[in-house]
Amino acid sequence: MLFLCREFKFDAAHNLIHYHGKCERLHGHTYRLAVTLQGVPDTEGMIFDFVDLKRAVNDLVLSKLDHAYINDILPQPTAEYISQWIFRTLDEPLKRGNCELYEVRVWETESSSAICHREDI
Image (cartoon, one colour):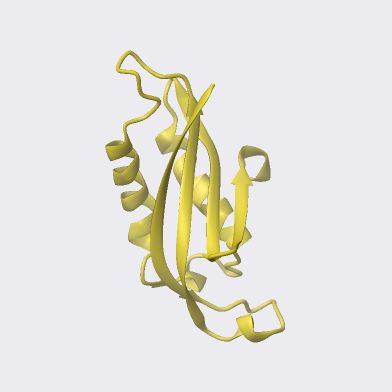
């Protein structure tokens, strides 16, 4: 089994309404997103074409999250819940006979991230 990963960035605002601290106020982040697939290379030697992966993530995820107020999508948009939402959104569209979505990782800051695997959804 091999792994293929592509990273993305998006800017968005949110506030954590069920949290007591400075993050309960409206604020924004430049999020970093890593989408990892696991699989076996096909006859062209690829698990998944990077161009197709970029297109899928842009169309299904970034078009909704970039420069958005994430609370309009998720009621409590923590990094954990954002990673779950992205996993659910990408899971079926990225599934092929030779590969599937393995992991979604969302960094809220340079040093703080949440990871979602299949068993987490």
